Image 1 (tube, protein in one colour):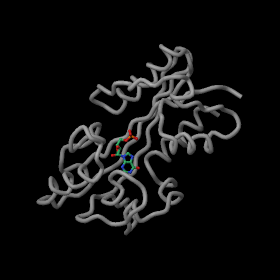
Image 2: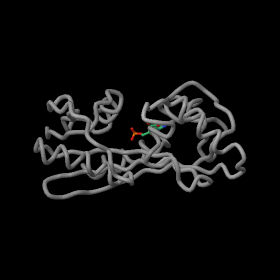
Image 3: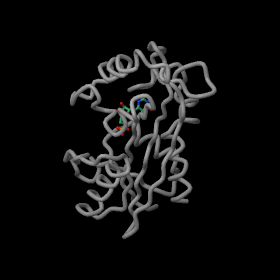
Length: 190
Ligand code: IMP
């Protein structure tokens, strides 16, 4: 079994990826390798931030590693909040405030088109590879549902009449940005 690091401390993401990658990989989180630093996410693109995190682990800890970054891209807001999705309403990473600001900024907009995009950077030896996953949809005018997290209560994927927050985790993962990016990572590592 090969060791590989997923540059996150999010227990839910780690559990999910361990199930997807199965028995071939021993997936370690940042905490498992003694990395308790806050890795700076200072890039202006999802690719840039994912790369910073993956390189940080490779260069300082020596492990092959992958890292992800996700953004919600809204057409009527020229792609915002994008790479700043977690801190759209400020540095507090407050999802309720982020969603409220998004709805406010879209209140006079008829074009509600948006997409979630996840980028994963994988560094193995000297090689850096990127995969991404996208789900197209639209931003609702009100919040619906209580599952999930972040912008889920206002994101309705194309072809559905419910938001991500009204879907169960399995249904969401089957079509989600992260689910699609992770499936590509699995194929890359196979
Ligand atoms: P991260 O790169 O996975 O930490 O995601 C950055 C931010 O994007 C999160 O803080 C959320 O606000 C938002 N986000 C990412 N994935 C999702 C999702 O599946 N549903 C809703 N919001 C998400």
